[in-house]
Image 1 (tube, rainbow over the protein chains, first blue to last red):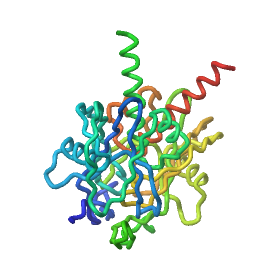
Image 2: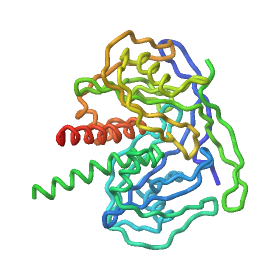
Image 3: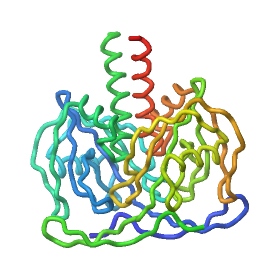
Image 4: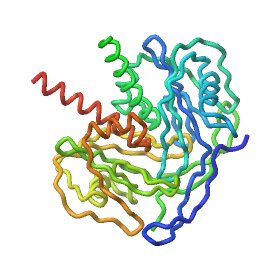
Amino acid sequence: MALPFRFTRKLVEVNGKVREYHVVEHGGAVAVVPIQDGRITLVRQTRPAVNEELLEIPAGCLEQGEEPLACAKRELAEETGWRANTWHELGWIYQAPGYSSEVLYLYIATDLSMGEQDLDDSEDIEVVHLPVEEALAMARRCELRDAKTVAALFHLQNWLETHRRARESS
Amino acid sequence: MALPFRFTRKLVEVNGKVREYHVVEHGGAVAVVPIQDGRITLVRQTRPAVNEELLEIPAGCLEQGEEPLACAKRELAEETGWRANTWHELGWIYQAPGYSSEVLYLYIATDLSMGEQDLDDSEDIEVVHLPVEEALAMARRCELRDAKTVAALFHLQNWLETHRRARESS
């Protein structure tokens, strides 16, 4: 399997001086907040980089030439079994711009129906369904430690608030 | 200057199979949300990894043996000139646990007074003061693209809400 990133160095001029920077060149990734009946679906998996099991939103790397939305649909299905009828594009952010070029496309997926989970053999993923309020409270207590998950929950919280206001005013 | 991270490989067993992972071994970092008179202080700087100027909260890497809070005070002063009399520890998260061991300690800094900015010559930083609501709106539109900044604003938004409720009920 080709790695979705490589370690490299680049020369960049800052303040008139050329400097060498160590950089992760990354092909980009997606992360999805799946919401159904007031519950969010998270995945628990071992992260070798931090020697720990983490609870995160479903996410994965773009394959060569793959469109972000197609990747989001593929990763959501593979990791959780969910298929979503409605996709809300939140935009994109940089995961760790201090040393990585990784672009991360964020989505909220709704109108879900359950199909087959389809993990490759390097993945050992447990699917966890939680009430949205519980996930938000866990993030507030830093019990959800993955930065992209917390960033996505910022968007989710504001998205839910916007929808609540829209319902109240209609 | 010693790099705060290095690229390495590690062997980890997943599903009974030993696999090789490419990992950024990182010494840890801090990020600070400075708030004064309803305004947040951000820093604009060029990020060579993404070839772009980004607007982010002040942040920086732990020096060898440095305590996170001491690092937060140092980085806030160096990058913005602010000294804070009150520090709120939000906890810590992982910046990019898919491939980096980086731990990121998050703080809200209040009761600020202005001193000297003190950048080293590899830094070219512009200090930007924005109304909190404007920064939150920019994050909602993905105009703030740095994941740690968005994650910190999740905490800020909830922290402000908790304080608002505490004031209302007192």
